[in-house]
Image (cartoon, rainbow, N blue to C red):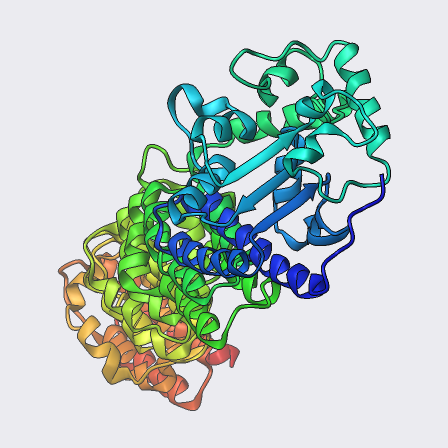
Length: 573
């Protein structure tokens, strides 16, 4: 049979049909994503209805042949599968057995709406698994008709092809006879009987192991579909939502839809933070970070919105939610937490300190410390203020952070920890001072020289005795006023005290040792002589002229053991 001759204005008709089906594809995609009641879908549908009615005013019938990947009018493609993102309109119709679709003058918006609903509407209840053909039959549309592969198979074969008399296949393809034979062959080989109320549903044929009428489904095809369905069913709710957001942001072209998509992300961030779902949150932020490079329809406004979303994770409220997530019973493994914290900037220092204070397990605290070491160096004030906290574990964490910065100006703040109730905190402060302030003025360390805890006090004196620090004797004076208490110290304690004095004050401490050499009295005589002998050894190691003068004074005015010891040392010199 020869194809019908196209009208003189066929080019205009084809061009108009392309516009109609392009808008139909957009409407179908919006319906598939948002549903028919969505404002975005309604906007696309209004445009589709306008184009369709305009076309039918000029050409009373719009009839297209349905191929696997395209729709044809006068043997010209008015729609191709590559025009669509995701599921194809042509594939949807062809896969469910539709071979021609016909729209006639008088089409109402309600019927067009019903047609779109039959294609991609979210069916519920008993009709949820019906194919397109079954759903179109149920709609009983007066101005929209269709021809199926089943109709072709059951129609008698004549040179004129009877269905053409009713207006179908106005311009059949040259290979139409072969198509009919193929359809009949498939039906004869076990395609199944046609139900009384219409053609078999696509899902039913697949479940029975066969193929769709007019559509070849191989075992590999079925396995691929089954694997995809299994993978989709295995996705948790959060992963499913994330995949939808990613698809919208990376593929959507409408500016208002992109804006709305970005506007819901902050709420998702809050929910994921509260739940402790670090992997999903990291994935979401990565999508937002890269979407501008993936979607060419991202406008400058969208880029600004995306950047603000990324920056929002450093806001105090969002950072505070990290604590809830870490303490959540549903919190995920911590492997994805460091990449998340790496996105924080210096504005997050104060709230992150609050998170550190409220978390007890060692592993997350170590991760939080590392983050504060990175971002706190440029904004140390919140960390330094935290040293006044009464919780020992928290303050020790802050001291470790400050020590890692190695900022000399933090030594004075560490000296204030001397009043903390925990000796472990005070000992850590001494170590941190030695790290951030390795030489120079010893005042920050001297604050701990009279600590009530012996270990802390010895730690401070040993650090001062290294010779890296200097102190005027006047700074030492408040710590040396109680001579009786000094005499009562153990031999090792006095030796360490004198070594720290010598290393930091030098000749400035000689009058103090002279007083110990010349002091007399029977009370605690043995300890006083022991103290004086230790003072002699320190003066000898000092070795300055002023120290020799003190030894000479002790040789003349000290007790008998002191005079002998001083004389012996002077003779050696």
